Length: 162
Image 1 (cartoon, helix red, strand yellow):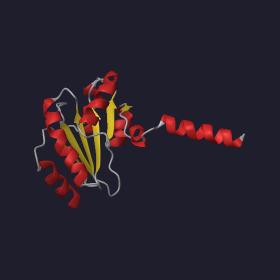
Image 2: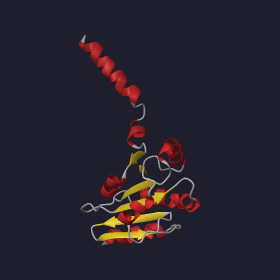
Image 3: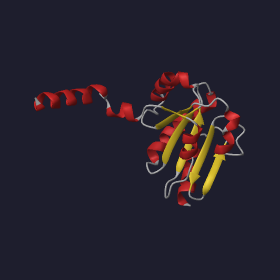
């Protein structure tokens, strides 16, 4: 009897998660309080939080630079927050996998009243994307721009030294 129960438990453990990464890297739909937690500084950790959308050409153009920087700086926490509609979660998931973000921390914010929360990210943010928030123990810096080759890595190196 115990053997049967053990086999059943093992079976469902493998059936539900054929790829352990798939579950861990699924896009999480979050609301503003969770976003506020994400943008808080953590002792000894540099965070790069990118706000983007699948329909934003400059966002898509800069994504490879974030993917590359993520590989070069494993000690930096990269977070990607999609501003797509929550009902497009599967589209965002497929798109992010295609762009090499499938092993990244991915979130989709479920609050269309952007004006109610963008000031919590940065009072300097107009709401335009792409936008990138860099969080360290020394403070927060917001960049409302498209990053180009090497530019993001140089900025991370500078922030990591402080």
